[in-house]
Image (cartoon, rainbow, N blue to C red):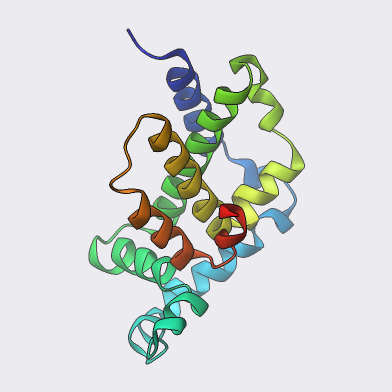
Length: 168
């Protein structure tokens, strides 16, 4: 027996993330990605190993986990930039869809196809990931899985410091 919310959220996230939105949406939705593409493909090692992280607060202010995550997937695992962001898009949409179907009916998932959500997913990928991780914590809490929550919350804060606002 498969959970209906899980199934529909999975299908929605797959369809949403593989659809070529960049062909029909204004380019403004993808500015953030272009910035990250330049960062990852040109001077990435300077960010990770260039002395940015010399204090504990610098790990938060320079969002270490975001840079480290991109570094691991791009440099160590050799995923292409597009593959990394396809996965991030899928993860963000899937977790958001699960939360959405928890509070409303599955039939309302198409309402996520709106300009604000596109902007959030495609133009604010780092914040979307941090919030998705906090959403994941909520889902794990509902399942009584608590041990890993502090690590996920810390990782979310190290991806985007404004995630702290969503914890309050």
